[in-house]
Image (cartoon, rainbow, N blue to C red; front, side, top):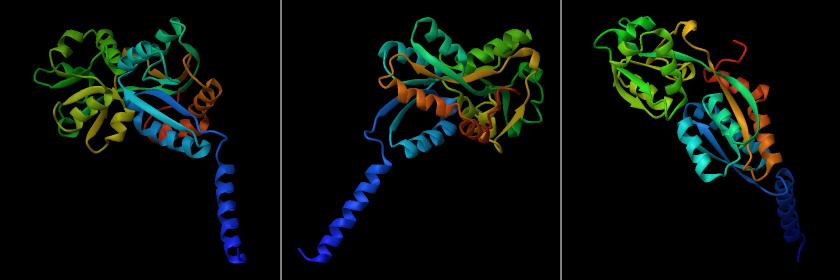
Length: 255
């Protein structure tokens, strides 16, 4: 074999070796359950984790209540990142959580279609006859529970519910209804309104009516590689990851 062919073979071997050295000894596959309202930052972070480690992360997005039911039925999966700590607490009581780490706050606001901004300027305006509202299904999603609790705390629940024309299964669905003008307003996450700025304006909810939900990443007892699942959990709660969440409109827990 001539020197030129040996050169090509050596170059090919060197490239193969460099690629193999950059990857882990084996590529694992992690399965995580994530609240639908967290899709944008989580997608970005998953891509970064995969690029850094060579491991694959499969994400199942949905309403937090729906994901909770999936986890209970399937008894499998590695991480759970719902829209509220409440859902992690449910699994923790059942002995299905190994550990968890808080990440950011999930802050409720009134998202108003920009065409209705002059009509809806305060929480009390949600009770105005003729206003069309969307509400999260409290059995299916974190902000459904949150919105219902806010209405209860305000003392205006009955008048607000009279104006609800549709219930949604995820906060993304609610934001879509508002941004497209199918409804005038909905109680959604600050991040969802931020991500639809230009189509949705924000009206703050009186702080006496709510406490922001906590978004956290939890390692499930069913995790097949607990060390790697813990590594991914740590990654989601790192300062760099929190900065990514904030870029998408989420607030840190100390605010």
